[in-house]
Image (cartoon, rainbow, N blue to C red; front, side, top):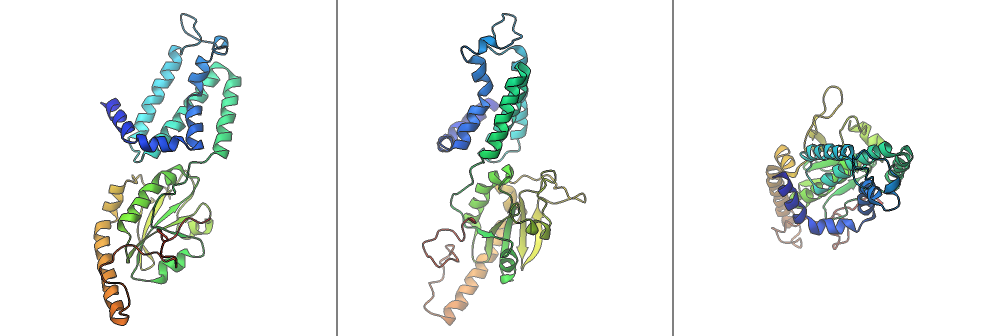
Length: 307
């Protein structure tokens, strides 16, 4: 049943997978994940590799290698039970497949193991996960603008994501947060992001740890009137995050987005009515499409990423 579900998910996301495969990060990841089977089957090379097969055929996987790969499959399935996006599924697959390849190469030949491990380190340092650049309605803050924007208008409600570009979880969550901003942004409800990996003082000011051990990235914080109302994930007394799944359904439920959206829409309509009384040249009431703060009316998003 799990295999059928996986195949259905694969074919459903096939157009998106095809688009990703054109990016260098995914091409290199697929090649590195398939490195050990390629070496095992490579003519002229596989004949010189040691094997534990009874027939002595060193160009096929032996029983211990099959056992390691089966164990890898079980781990990937367990980790992917909590994965939400396809990026998270692929990230888990790439990570644990590379770990399995390191073990397999070291088991066959220590020189191959060292060489493959060096390739993994070089890949990690030079090839980053592609940053989400799709449609969104998100304001990107810096260390100098976040306080000013949150406190500028006490009637505004902000949902701010604290993230770091090096965090795989943050990269996977980016399309989810962008989709929420397109659905729920209005005059009284805004969405923002701040890179605390870049602005360390913001991390300290808003008590969001960037340590991988704290597991606080990403963090979503709801601000009303410039004051923090709630955040997810919650943090315990040891400053470690309480496990929480960053799915669209969980965020809508925990932050009461539907209720917030209705209240903020009423606020926007009230402001529009007062504005019409003061200036009859303003647009007609009922135009609820998100309007950018930028002076360029053609700009589709409120603020794009810091360059």
